[in-house]
Length: 174
Image 1: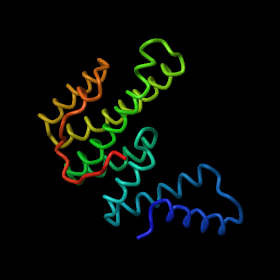
Image 2: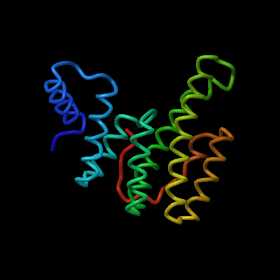
Image 3: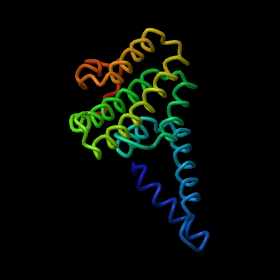
C-alpha cells in the first residue's frame, strides 16, 4: 500500500493539474487534511500513527496529532491512544534531553532549543492527558500527571519516562 507521503504527493499533483498551477500553502494543507481524514475513514489508523511518528516524532504536527487523538477518543481506542502518545512522548522527552545538559549550564542556543523541545513534549502530554481523561482512565491520567511533573522538574529521561506504557501496538523509537 502506498505511504501517506506518496499519496499526498499524488493528490497534490492532481489538484495542481486541475488548477493549472502549484498549490498555495493553504491549498496544500487542505489536500493533506482531506487525505488524513480519508485515511481515518478508511481505518488506516496504524499507518497514520507510523506516518505521524515518522514526520512529527520530535516536533510539530499538533493539528494532525490532535485530530488523530480526537478520533481515538471518539472511538474509545485506548490502545492506539497509548501507542500514539507513548511513542511521541518517548521521542520528545529524549529530544529535550539532547539539549538540556548544555542548556542547563547557560549555552544560549541550547537553552532556546531545549525550551522548544520542552514545549513540543508538553503539547503531546496535554493531548495524552485529555485523551486519558475523556476515556475515564483516571489511574493512567494521574500517572501521566506525575510523569509531567518529573519532566517539568528536569529529571533525566530514564527517571521521567515509565519503563513500560500500556500500549499494545509497538512503534519503535527510531
